[in-house]
Amino acid sequence: MTEKAAQARGIASPSADGISAQTRTMLWILLIVYIFNFLDRQIVNILAEPIKTDLGLSDTELGLLAGPAFAVFYALLGIPIARHADKQGTNRVRLISLALAVWSAMTAVCGLAQNFVQLLFARIGVGVGEAGCTPAAHSLISDSVAPEKRSSAIAFYGLGVPIGSLLGLIIGGIVNDLYGWRIALMLVGAPGLLLASVVLFVMREPRHSRTAEAAAAATVPLSTGEALREIFASRAYVYILIAASVTAFLGYGKGLWTISFFIRSHGLSTTEAGLSMAVVLGVAGVIGTWLGGKLADTFGARDKRHILTFPAYGMAVAAPVLFLGYVMEDWRIAVALLVLPTMLNAAYYGPAYGCVQGLVQPRARAVAASIMLFGQNLIGLGLGPFLFGVLSDALQPVAGQESVRWVLYGAAWLGLIPAFFFWRASLRLKTELKSG
Image (cartoon, rainbow, N blue to C red):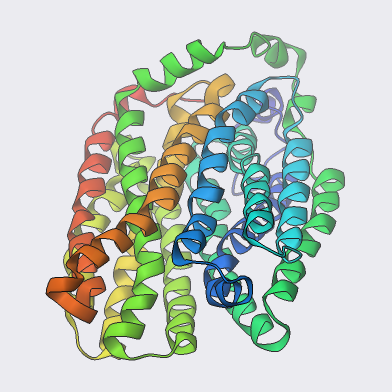
């Protein structure tokens, strides 16, 4: 990218690798924000049992807190907030800072809850706050890096998913053992308020540094109907949306019930199962997310179809290996066999969301990302863990204690569905991806 082109896009002069120091700082701050995002979201999983015992909750109430209470409000508010982020007069940095402050404060408030209703509304507040983060962040990243670096830049941001989830399991478990679940929630929520100030005063909105010509070209806003028509006119986008939603459904379902599988079928303690999943699979998720973005940019530069090649073929390879991991009777071999599928299944984030940002014009980018998040959270987080549990209960008369294992057998092979749709999307990228 030339210096003149960079200035027109509102990007500081690039370094040798094409990313300016200002943009690199922004990426690191956004990564930390996303780590807090998933830490605050996932910490409830490891604190579920002590919360249930202390507040006298039923499993249904606990399931509602862990999934739908967060996912429904996150998904429904994501699109209107994204519409606001796409407006040229919106300062996305301020929006992200405000969102971070809200969800961090509400996470801390969760620790003050004295009953189910109070905790329910606090969790809804966490979902409301987090709805303002990722669509605006993806839009910021896309405006700040060249298209050929987009997948790896968004994948870098996406490292917040495995890192935040890992830290949530570890910090939540340790602090709960020492001081209780209330202190654990307050401890992870409070630092986010400080980070919100850092975001506000350190990051810069690229729109403010655009040239007059570039700003004038982007001032006419799209109506909601126009944005939706453009987004869903892309066949590649629809395929990616289906693939990402099914991936999330399987990912959130397996994320919760694989821990139960190791406890029930392999006799591990809660601590052993939690640490095994957090450390081994957390590291695999980090490697897979980073590698997916890197390979997408490297091979996508030669042929745009290859942006999604690794996620498509990787998920196809992951299915039989994951099935073998669930079959094994030795838990050590089982954990080892889950590492490669976890890495391959995590590789989609950067390529998928990078493509989404390139399939629509800049005025619809945040909305395009929010619709993806709508599908991933409503279908994935809202239904995944719940339906896995329903199937396990249904199979219990036949499979007994091994019912979760049977559910996971099916989940392993269902991974071929997103593999197919990522492959179908890849065939359309040459004609549908935009250059800017």
